[in-house]
Image (spheres, rainbow, N blue to C red):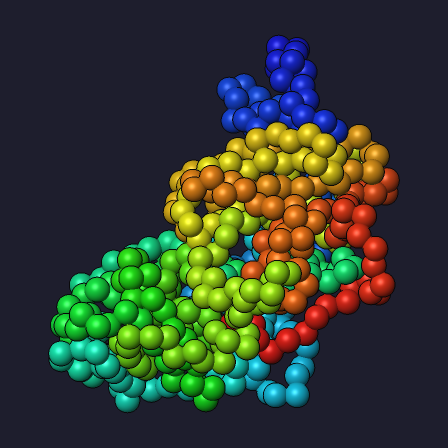
Length: 459
């Protein structure tokens, strides 16, 4: 680095909050890109490439003429596959259950970058396995309080004009281990990874409803899937028609079986259970059906004795993905704190980050484009001084809603619920650089560390 660059970097590396948080635009400033990057210390993540990098140094090969430049590479393939050195970047399935095919698999958010989730890593929730559906034999029925009840073939739907929308889908049971009295030891993605973000392409729901002509009495939409569980759920018609679509494509390719092939409902911002997969039926009614997944599973008893029902919108949430649980900071120095924020109520307007457990906060840089009801990537530089630190992020959306601290959420909602956990997450960095999940609200705990509540009600 030149003396001029050195001086400019020194002037810019000033704290904007307690415990080493720096100006969020540090890496974007003219003339500082190479200087700042040269000082970055890597965070060690759990992956095959990371573990091998500790044992193999670049000096072990001839960098001027590495061996892979001396033999022909592999030929073409009909469908691409990840590198063998990224074989640990996979979904993490829930432990075996008494009912085969009933469970979840988490998206490894802590091992991903950007905002779009690859199709093969999108989280899963199945109640009775993934059905094998022949699209030539599948039909969508729209009926009930309509003037023209109709069946639609998949081939017919594929000929309709389509639209695309980038949005997240989050299971209502995501992050539910946060309700536990003790922190858990899982990686960030295997704790909070029942959420993914994709570009969905399909037919606006309003287009098909115009063909069947709802009556004035129609107020609710009952969606049903074609899986062996016959998942059904009630959706307010006004909510469903606002932005809903019948999705046929995900990230440019036909939806995969585990994500709802050949047809699924996508309702941006609404909790995952309403985004019914393997869609086979839409019935318009006057009242909700009061199915199992909106009574016993998504009705929560509050401290005042009232029941919280039809939560619908996912509330603002954020998560630091790096550094996060089970990662390692090898030495003091300059690091990038990065993560994801999202809200079912619209755009994320601010993500504040703290490195001292919430005593002070600094605004993170939001990566463009910032889209409504989609993942927003945030970043901020941080100088770790080698001492214990508590990292937090706090999201605010365009409605003014602010992500709550854990103590606030537990106080407001009590402990009788299981779903809709969106509290601020705390990661502790100890003096050795090891990162772990902690509660810093001084809650008395009787649970053993790592305890995870298991329930079959996830979406």
